[in-house]
Amino acid sequence: MRIKKRVPAVPPIVKEDRSRVRIVEMDGYWKTELVGHFPRGAPTCTLVGTREGLAEVLRPLRLVGPCDARVLITGETGTGKNTVAELIHHMHEERRHHQFRRTNLGALVPELAASQLFGHVKGAFTGAVKDSPGIVVESNHGTLFLDQLSDASSAVQTMLLTLLEVKKVNPVGAHGVPGKDVDFRVIAGTIESLEELRDSRKVREDLFYRICECHVELKPLRFRRSEILPMARFFLEQACALRKGMSVLTSIAPDVQRALEACHWPGNVRELDHTIRGAVVESRADPTATVLGAQWLRMAPRRSHRTHSDDYETALHQFRHEWAHRLLASKLNNKRAAATMGISQDTFRKYRDWNEPSAGEWPSRKGR
Image (cartoon, rainbow, N blue to C red):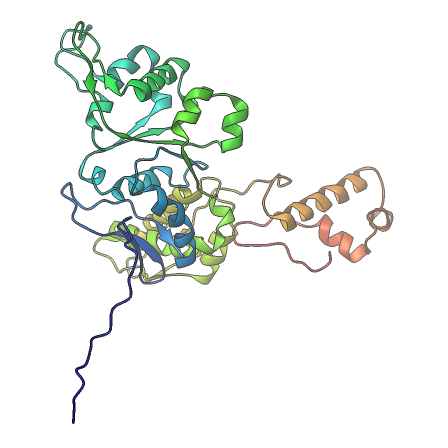
Protein backbone atom coordinates (compact mmCIF):
# COMPACT_ATOMS: atom_id res chain seq x y z
CA MET A 1 0.00 0.00 0.00
CA ARG A 2 1.46 3.30 -1.08
CA ILE A 3 1.26 6.11 1.41
CA LYS A 4 0.86 9.51 -0.13
CA LYS A 5 2.97 12.20 1.36
CA ARG A 6 1.00 15.10 2.71
CA VAL A 7 1.81 18.21 0.73
CA PRO A 8 1.48 21.40 2.79
CA ALA A 9 -1.06 23.85 1.45
CA VAL A 10 0.41 26.77 -0.40
CA PRO A 11 -0.40 29.94 1.54
CA PRO A 12 -2.29 32.58 -0.41
CA ILE A 13 -0.22 35.41 -1.80
CA VAL A 14 -1.00 38.52 0.20
CA LYS A 15 -0.08 41.84 -1.29
CA GLU A 16 2.26 43.61 1.11
CA ASP A 17 0.87 46.71 2.77
CA ARG A 18 3.84 49.02 2.63
CA SER A 19 2.04 51.76 4.54
CA ARG A 20 3.08 50.23 7.90
CA VAL A 21 -0.17 51.19 9.60
CA ARG A 22 -2.96 49.01 10.94
CA ILE A 23 -6.27 49.50 12.73
CA VAL A 24 -6.54 47.94 16.19
CA GLU A 25 -9.54 47.56 18.47
CA MET A 26 -9.39 49.09 21.94
CA ASP A 27 -11.96 49.36 24.74
CA GLY A 28 -14.79 51.33 23.13
CA TYR A 29 -12.91 52.69 20.14
CA TRP A 30 -10.56 51.81 17.28
CA LYS A 31 -7.22 53.46 16.61
CA THR A 32 -4.38 53.42 14.11
CA GLU A 33 -1.07 51.84 15.05
CA LEU A 34 2.21 52.15 13.20
CA VAL A 35 4.23 48.98 12.73
CA GLY A 36 8.02 48.76 12.76
CA HIS A 37 11.09 50.12 14.52
CA PHE A 38 11.32 53.86 15.08
CA PRO A 39 14.83 55.03 16.03
CA ARG A 40 13.54 58.48 17.02
CA GLY A 41 10.98 57.01 19.41
CA ALA A 42 7.42 55.83 18.98
CA PRO A 43 5.38 58.43 17.04
CA THR A 44 2.27 59.87 18.62
CA CYS A 45 0.32 60.45 15.40
CA THR A 46 -2.71 58.33 16.28
CA LEU A 47 -6.09 58.51 14.58
CA VAL A 48 -9.14 57.38 16.57
CA GLY A 49 -12.73 56.54 15.63
CA THR A 50 -14.77 53.65 14.31
CA ARG A 51 -13.24 50.91 12.22
CA GLU A 52 -15.18 52.00 9.13
CA GLY A 53 -14.32 55.66 9.65
CA LEU A 54 -10.61 54.97 10.04
CA ALA A 55 -10.62 52.70 6.99
CA GLU A 56 -12.10 55.55 4.94
CA VAL A 57 -9.48 58.03 6.18
CA LEU A 58 -6.61 55.61 5.65
CA ARG A 59 -7.63 54.62 2.13
CA PRO A 60 -5.94 57.60 0.40
CA LEU A 61 -3.13 57.77 2.98
CA ARG A 62 -2.05 54.20 2.20
CA LEU A 63 -1.68 55.20 -1.45
CA VAL A 64 0.34 58.39 -0.95
CA GLY A 65 2.23 57.42 2.21
CA PRO A 66 4.86 55.00 0.83
CA CYS A 67 5.73 57.22 -2.18
CA ASP A 68 7.25 60.70 -2.53
CA ALA A 69 4.20 62.44 -3.99
CA ARG A 70 3.53 65.93 -2.67
CA VAL A 71 0.27 66.12 -0.73
CA LEU A 72 -2.15 68.94 0.04
CA ILE A 73 -4.33 68.30 3.10
CA THR A 74 -7.47 70.41 3.44
CA GLY A 75 -9.79 70.56 6.42
CA GLU A 76 -11.32 72.91 8.94
CA THR A 77 -9.42 73.92 12.03
CA GLY A 78 -9.02 71.08 14.50
CA THR A 79 -9.68 68.24 12.02
CA GLY A 80 -6.18 66.75 12.50
CA LYS A 81 -4.15 67.94 9.51
CA ASN A 82 -0.89 67.89 11.47
CA THR A 83 -1.57 64.35 12.75
CA VAL A 84 -2.39 63.07 9.27
CA ALA A 85 0.71 64.73 7.79
CA GLU A 86 2.93 63.09 10.40
CA LEU A 87 1.22 59.75 9.79
CA ILE A 88 1.96 60.05 6.06
CA HIS A 89 5.60 60.78 6.94
CA HIS A 90 5.89 57.61 9.05
CA MET A 91 4.35 55.50 6.28
CA HIS A 92 7.41 56.13 4.10
CA GLU A 93 10.04 53.40 4.25
CA GLU A 94 13.08 55.71 4.21
CA ARG A 95 11.86 59.15 5.29
CA ARG A 96 10.35 57.92 8.54
CA HIS A 97 13.91 57.54 9.87
CA HIS A 98 14.45 61.28 9.46
CA GLN A 99 12.78 64.41 10.79
CA PHE A 100 9.19 65.48 10.34
CA ARG A 101 9.42 69.27 10.44
CA ARG A 102 6.35 71.47 10.69
CA THR A 103 6.27 75.20 10.03
CA ASN A 104 3.34 77.60 10.13
CA LEU A 105 3.69 79.67 6.98
CA GLY A 106 1.32 82.32 8.30
CA ALA A 107 3.71 82.99 11.18
CA LEU A 108 6.74 83.58 8.96
CA VAL A 109 7.63 87.26 8.83
CA PRO A 110 8.68 88.07 5.23
CA GLU A 111 11.81 89.95 6.40
CA LEU A 112 13.00 86.94 8.43
CA ALA A 113 11.49 84.10 6.36
CA ALA A 114 14.66 83.44 4.34
CA SER A 115 16.68 82.97 7.55
CA GLN A 116 14.01 80.79 9.14
CA LEU A 117 13.58 78.60 6.06
CA PHE A 118 17.11 78.44 4.63
CA GLY A 119 19.22 79.26 7.67
CA HIS A 120 22.01 81.82 8.06
CA VAL A 121 25.69 82.03 8.81
CA LYS A 122 27.22 83.69 11.83
CA GLY A 123 27.33 87.46 11.42
CA ALA A 124 24.87 87.54 8.53
CA PHE A 125 22.84 90.17 10.37
CA THR A 126 22.55 91.73 13.80
CA GLY A 127 21.78 88.98 16.28
CA ALA A 128 23.14 86.13 14.15
CA VAL A 129 25.63 84.97 16.79
CA LYS A 130 25.98 81.46 15.36
CA ASP A 131 25.19 79.44 12.26
CA SER A 132 21.62 78.20 11.88
CA PRO A 133 20.72 75.39 9.47
CA GLY A 134 17.11 76.51 8.87
CA ILE A 135 13.90 74.54 8.68
CA VAL A 136 14.51 73.09 5.20
CA VAL A 137 17.91 71.60 6.02
CA GLU A 138 16.51 70.19 9.27
CA SER A 139 13.92 68.30 7.22
CA ASN A 140 16.49 66.98 4.73
CA HIS A 141 15.73 63.35 3.80
CA GLY A 142 12.56 63.69 5.90
CA THR A 143 9.31 65.60 5.48
CA LEU A 144 8.55 69.31 5.54
CA PHE A 145 4.96 70.10 6.51
CA LEU A 146 3.90 73.57 5.31
CA ASP A 147 0.91 74.39 7.49
CA GLN A 148 -1.52 77.25 6.76
CA LEU A 149 -0.45 77.46 3.11
CA SER A 150 -3.16 80.01 2.30
CA ASP A 151 -1.74 82.42 4.91
CA ALA A 152 1.74 82.54 3.37
CA SER A 153 2.83 85.98 2.16
CA SER A 154 3.66 86.49 -1.51
CA ALA A 155 7.37 86.76 -0.62
CA VAL A 156 7.32 83.42 1.20
CA GLN A 157 5.43 81.79 -1.68
CA THR A 158 8.12 82.99 -4.10
CA MET A 159 10.82 81.48 -1.88
CA LEU A 160 8.97 78.17 -1.73
CA LEU A 161 8.45 78.07 -5.49
CA THR A 162 12.17 78.61 -6.08
CA LEU A 163 13.03 75.97 -3.49
CA LEU A 164 10.78 73.36 -5.11
CA GLU A 165 12.25 74.13 -8.52
CA VAL A 166 16.00 74.06 -7.74
CA LYS A 167 16.03 71.98 -4.52
CA LYS A 168 19.02 73.91 -3.22
CA VAL A 169 19.45 76.02 -0.10
CA ASN A 170 21.62 79.12 0.23
CA PRO A 171 21.88 80.31 3.84
CA VAL A 172 21.54 84.04 4.40
CA GLY A 173 24.99 85.64 4.39
CA ALA A 174 26.74 82.73 2.62
CA HIS A 175 27.99 84.76 -0.35
CA GLY A 176 29.93 82.94 -3.05
CA VAL A 177 29.16 79.54 -1.55
CA PRO A 178 27.38 76.98 -3.76
CA GLY A 179 23.91 76.02 -2.58
CA LYS A 180 23.38 72.86 -0.54
CA ASP A 181 21.36 70.14 -2.24
CA VAL A 182 18.34 69.08 -0.24
CA ASP A 183 16.01 66.11 -0.59
CA PHE A 184 12.77 66.31 1.34
CA ARG A 185 9.11 65.52 0.91
CA VAL A 186 6.54 68.32 0.92
CA ILE A 187 3.15 68.09 2.57
CA ALA A 188 1.02 71.23 2.87
CA GLY A 189 -2.11 71.99 4.87
CA THR A 190 -4.82 74.62 4.76
CA ILE A 191 -8.21 75.25 6.37
CA GLU A 192 -9.69 76.25 3.02
CA SER A 193 -11.27 73.79 0.63
CA LEU A 194 -9.65 73.06 -2.71
CA GLU A 195 -12.26 75.16 -4.51
CA GLU A 196 -11.84 78.09 -2.09
CA LEU A 197 -8.10 77.93 -2.49
CA ARG A 198 -8.38 78.08 -6.28
CA ASP A 199 -11.02 80.81 -6.36
CA SER A 200 -9.47 83.07 -3.72
CA ARG A 201 -6.08 83.04 -5.47
CA LYS A 202 -4.37 83.38 -2.08
CA VAL A 203 -1.81 80.88 -3.32
CA ARG A 204 0.11 81.43 -6.54
CA GLU A 205 -1.22 79.19 -9.26
CA ASP A 206 2.21 77.80 -10.16
CA LEU A 207 2.93 77.03 -6.49
CA PHE A 208 -0.50 75.46 -6.01
CA TYR A 209 -0.02 72.99 -8.86
CA ARG A 210 3.51 72.14 -7.74
CA ILE A 211 2.32 71.23 -4.25
CA CYS A 212 -1.06 69.65 -4.99
CA GLU A 213 0.01 66.43 -6.69
CA CYS A 214 -2.34 64.54 -4.37
CA HIS A 215 -5.25 65.88 -2.32
CA VAL A 216 -6.47 64.56 1.03
CA GLU A 217 -9.66 66.07 2.47
CA LEU A 218 -10.48 65.74 6.17
CA LYS A 219 -14.20 66.03 6.90
CA PRO A 220 -15.52 68.13 9.81
CA LEU A 221 -16.57 66.24 12.91
CA ARG A 222 -20.22 67.21 12.40
CA PHE A 223 -20.21 65.08 9.24
CA ARG A 224 -18.76 62.12 11.19
CA ARG A 225 -21.07 61.94 14.20
CA SER A 226 -20.51 58.20 14.58
CA GLU A 227 -16.88 59.02 15.38
CA ILE A 228 -17.66 61.36 18.30
CA LEU A 229 -18.19 58.83 21.09
CA PRO A 230 -15.20 56.61 20.18
CA MET A 231 -13.02 59.74 20.16
CA ALA A 232 -14.52 60.91 23.45
CA ARG A 233 -13.70 57.55 25.08
CA PHE A 234 -10.12 57.80 23.84
CA PHE A 235 -9.73 61.37 25.11
CA LEU A 236 -11.26 60.36 28.44
CA GLU A 237 -8.73 57.55 28.74
CA GLN A 238 -5.89 59.98 28.02
CA ALA A 239 -7.21 62.70 30.33
CA CYS A 240 -7.61 60.44 33.36
CA ALA A 241 -3.97 61.23 34.18
CA LEU A 242 -5.36 64.56 35.42
CA ARG A 243 -7.08 62.63 38.24
CA LYS A 244 -3.84 61.33 39.70
CA GLY A 245 -4.47 59.71 43.07
CA MET A 246 -8.22 59.53 42.42
CA SER A 247 -10.54 56.88 41.00
CA VAL A 248 -10.45 56.30 37.25
CA LEU A 249 -13.33 57.52 35.09
CA THR A 250 -14.25 54.41 33.15
CA SER A 251 -17.35 55.55 31.26
CA ILE A 252 -19.40 58.50 30.05
CA ALA A 253 -22.93 59.11 31.33
CA PRO A 254 -25.73 58.61 28.74
CA ASP A 255 -26.86 62.25 28.91
CA VAL A 256 -23.27 63.39 28.32
CA GLN A 257 -23.04 61.05 25.33
CA ARG A 258 -26.19 62.60 23.85
CA ALA A 259 -24.82 66.09 24.44
CA LEU A 260 -21.54 65.27 22.74
CA GLU A 261 -23.28 63.74 19.72
CA ALA A 262 -25.62 66.71 19.39
CA CYS A 263 -22.95 69.41 19.49
CA HIS A 264 -22.00 71.21 16.28
CA TRP A 265 -18.24 71.15 17.16
CA PRO A 266 -16.96 74.13 15.17
CA GLY A 267 -13.50 73.38 16.60
CA ASN A 268 -13.82 69.73 15.52
CA VAL A 269 -11.59 67.08 17.13
CA ARG A 270 -9.45 69.60 19.00
CA GLU A 271 -12.52 71.13 20.63
CA LEU A 272 -13.83 67.70 21.61
CA ASP A 273 -10.48 66.83 23.17
CA HIS A 274 -10.36 70.06 25.19
CA THR A 275 -13.98 69.64 26.27
CA ILE A 276 -13.30 66.17 27.66
CA ARG A 277 -10.12 67.34 29.40
CA GLY A 278 -11.99 70.25 30.94
CA ALA A 279 -14.72 67.92 32.20
CA VAL A 280 -12.14 65.60 33.74
CA VAL A 281 -10.57 68.54 35.57
CA GLU A 282 -14.02 69.54 36.89
CA SER A 283 -14.58 65.93 38.00
CA ARG A 284 -11.75 66.26 40.50
CA ALA A 285 -14.43 67.66 42.81
CA ASP A 286 -15.48 64.02 43.33
CA PRO A 287 -12.38 61.85 43.93
CA THR A 288 -14.45 58.63 43.96
CA ALA A 289 -16.35 59.19 40.70
CA THR A 290 -16.12 56.53 37.99
CA VAL A 291 -18.57 58.01 35.47
CA LEU A 292 -18.12 61.31 33.65
CA GLY A 293 -21.34 63.16 34.49
CA ALA A 294 -23.15 66.11 32.92
CA GLN A 295 -22.49 68.34 35.94
CA TRP A 296 -18.85 68.61 34.87
CA LEU A 297 -19.43 69.23 31.19
CA ARG A 298 -18.67 72.80 30.09
CA MET A 299 -19.52 73.23 26.43
CA ALA A 300 -19.45 76.38 24.35
CA PRO A 301 -22.94 77.78 23.71
CA ARG A 302 -24.44 76.66 20.44
CA ARG A 303 -25.04 79.15 17.70
CA SER A 304 -28.43 80.85 17.87
CA HIS A 305 -28.57 81.41 14.10
CA ARG A 306 -28.80 78.09 12.32
CA THR A 307 -29.85 78.70 8.75
CA HIS A 308 -26.35 77.63 7.73
CA SER A 309 -26.21 74.77 10.19
CA ASP A 310 -25.93 71.17 9.15
CA ASP A 311 -28.90 70.32 11.36
CA TYR A 312 -31.89 70.91 9.09
CA GLU A 313 -34.48 70.24 11.76
CA THR A 314 -33.06 72.76 14.23
CA ALA A 315 -32.82 75.36 11.48
CA LEU A 316 -36.47 74.72 10.54
CA HIS A 317 -37.64 75.11 14.15
CA GLN A 318 -35.59 78.29 14.50
CA PHE A 319 -37.17 79.76 11.38
CA ARG A 320 -40.74 78.91 12.45
CA HIS A 321 -40.08 80.24 15.95
CA GLU A 322 -38.90 83.58 14.57
CA TRP A 323 -41.77 83.67 12.06
CA ALA A 324 -44.30 83.14 14.86
CA HIS A 325 -42.87 86.04 16.85
CA ARG A 326 -42.81 88.34 13.83
CA LEU A 327 -46.51 87.62 13.27
CA LEU A 328 -47.31 88.33 16.93
CA ALA A 329 -45.28 91.54 16.73
CA SER A 330 -47.50 92.63 13.82
CA LYS A 331 -50.50 92.61 16.24
CA LEU A 332 -51.97 89.29 15.10
CA ASN A 333 -53.43 87.02 17.77
CA ASN A 334 -52.51 83.34 18.10
CA LYS A 335 -55.43 82.15 16.00
CA ARG A 336 -54.75 84.45 13.04
CA ALA A 337 -50.98 83.91 13.26
CA ALA A 338 -51.47 80.14 13.22
CA ALA A 339 -53.78 80.44 10.20
CA THR A 340 -51.17 82.56 8.41
CA MET A 341 -48.54 79.85 9.01
CA GLY A 342 -51.00 77.14 7.97
CA ILE A 343 -50.75 75.21 11.24
CA SER A 344 -53.01 74.51 14.22
CA GLN A 345 -53.01 76.77 17.29
CA ASP A 346 -51.48 73.99 19.41
CA THR A 347 -48.62 73.61 16.94
CA PHE A 348 -48.26 77.40 16.72
CA ARG A 349 -47.85 77.60 20.50
CA LYS A 350 -45.12 74.97 20.35
CA TYR A 351 -43.14 77.00 17.83
CA ARG A 352 -43.88 80.24 19.70
CA ASP A 353 -42.52 78.85 22.96
CA TRP A 354 -39.72 76.82 21.39
CA ASN A 355 -36.20 77.40 22.72
CA GLU A 356 -33.08 76.49 20.81
CA PRO A 357 -31.86 73.19 22.28
CA SER A 358 -28.86 73.21 24.54
CA ALA A 359 -26.16 70.63 23.91
CA GLY A 360 -27.65 67.17 23.99
CA GLU A 361 -31.23 68.21 23.17
CA TRP A 362 -32.83 67.96 19.77
CA PRO A 363 -36.13 69.51 18.69
CA SER A 364 -38.97 67.04 18.60
CA ARG A 365 -40.44 65.96 15.27
CA LYS A 366 -43.92 66.17 16.74
CA GLY A 367 -46.13 69.06 15.79
CA ARG A 368 -44.37 69.79 12.52
